[in-house]
Image (cartoon, rainbow, N blue to C red; front, top):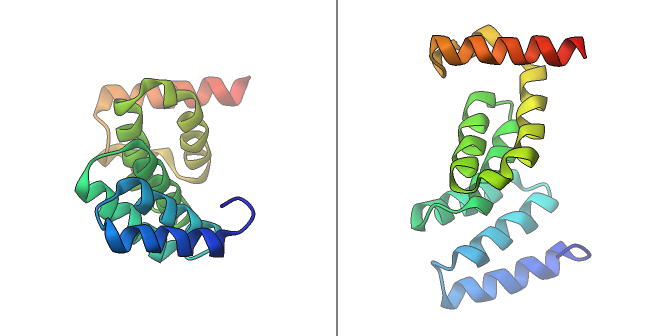
Length: 131
């Protein structure tokens, strides 16, 4: 897939003809579509994958797509869901989340987090900006 996303897409489509609920193939197809800048089609693949079973690959890629669409609050939601499934993903996903926090007004997040969480987010961002 790294070298030829079009060819990978054909292979994933063949697999999905016989196994339409194969989440690995759906995620692979979604990733190939992302490489081809077909983000809406990719998002549909990840949505279908998630409707079959919640899985880290689809959660992360859905978050990446939402981040690219500037739907930051939902992107953070999907990144956090992936971290809940595998805390070892926290370091990688924190990079994406930091990129989002740099793009938005932190006060707009008040709907997503309680007061205590907002206090810690603001403290963390202030600390990050100082150092």
